[in-house]
Length: 133
Image 1 (tube, rainbow, N blue to C red):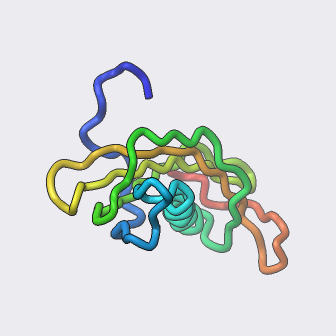
Image 2 (image 1 turned 90 degrees about the vertical axis):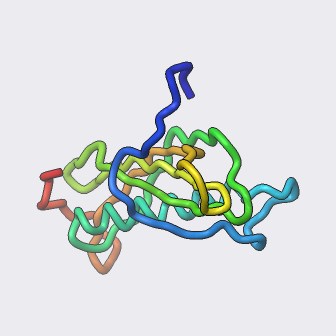
């Protein structure tokens, strides 16, 4: 993260909200980064599928940054915004924020750039018709 003043509110639309549970911890007692990454992918795919109007698949995850750990009992929220729409692909910025023990001000914990491709029922890329965002 840059030396700029930390943000106090997320950018984008709320795409997913869940609770961090004990079963999702790593050996250090924090929520496993892979669990957070999975939730972010789900949030991004919800936004991308809605934009594409159909089935999508994840093709890349870029610039994942873990700013702070997620703790058991945190309310975890993922906010998404479209960065780019190509002929068959959509790139979504996903930010993860938490409220510690479901209380207090939101804390920005993670962000990443996810790219999805629109596909048909056979998995073949298809053109995205709705390019407005």
